[in-house]
Length: 599
Image 1: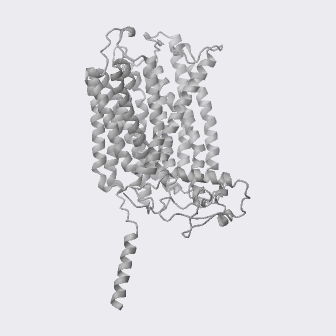
Image 2: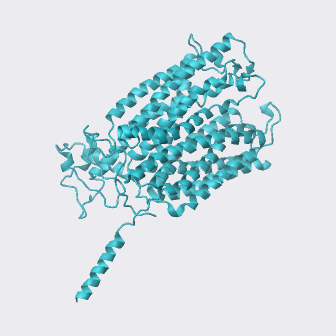
């Protein structure tokens, strides 16, 4: 009898062990060569294609500038907003690993088809030798079909890769260990380092091959890069941590809003942290969150009424009638992030000008090497490389020297808080516009008062000012990105609920899309408003006849207001995991043990 009882107990112990979730083996740094390598070659492939796409459409597909510009703008906007759908599908159904794998294949196929459109003469219109565009042959419906297929495949690829790659890389580190927390911080820094390196190569070597050697070879190079990216990603499959999705994270958000609206007439409890319905699913990957005082109108979703049913396991009988405090606090996390996200939109308006109008400034400046008009002339579109160069040089210095030094003074894992890092970037965006205004005033003055170097077609007289004077404003933009862009991505990753991290990644790109639209709207408004003013049009085709510096001062003023708004939001903001009563220390990294089954 005793022997039989012993066998039964051993069997029960074995069942208990079997039912426990598998221990997670975080490979951290060991997984980084595959993930960083995948992301580097993916960026070399995608950026190497997109950087010169406008020129390809106008020269090879014989499109008019307006048509090509509109097509590229629609493509870029759709690509950025597609990240929301990709993030939703990743967090809800497929997980980040499967989404990244499928998206990488889609991007490779898109680049492959694009290469074929350049290599096979039947897939693009005949070359237009005449300068008269009216004699050029338009693309046939069949050629349009191939081209739109390229855009479709690349949109699917970017929609899956962009919101998931950062979160997937951070998943490889243990958030509960000190080395894991530092690994996540380093990963975000080195991710943008490789991004900057990829952009520098793409904007120089790849663009040169496409424009001056062969479009087919120029597109084949990014296609090969994308193939290598996919190979590196799948080679590391066995060592990745792959978090299984829990289902739609947005359902819980909608439930809280709906239930709070239903119970809006109920009186708020005096001690909500004691009386509200408190239940945390045992298999949830989300960190248990303490009650916070902000957005208290949402608390009513967790008020238990006589009509509410509670299941034997402690969960709500009807999740559309009663929500837990945990659900409410997760929604509060998302709502707290939105005001910070709004500040990032206006920040990027300043950065965008260093990618657009700075090219026009360069066109009407002396771009010859060493100022000698007989020497090599630097292409105007190459000057934004100073942005990437600054980031590439500064990020290792920041990560390896500044962060450890400041950490010893502040005791904070990242040296400074995420919001402090973002605030520095926003402050630098104001400085960018001020420098740009002063440089433009100097360029314009020389163009109007000193001998010029000729006429730039469709623009105007070329100023004798060296275009290298544009480097300071572009370099400060790179410095601002090293603070703001990296800080922003890290902020979204750490402050969103864990089951919404892919959606958090898409927030970064949606903000950039909104900034592009806002910048276009601002340029349009300024152009229409100043066209009939005494000072004349600020933004004409010929910058010498306009007042671009005034536009830069306007952007600087908006940036100053945005900085004040951001500082106010930062004082109000409470990091995830703090009670928000002013006495808690801000926690930037959750300490929840990941106990969700892995796939």
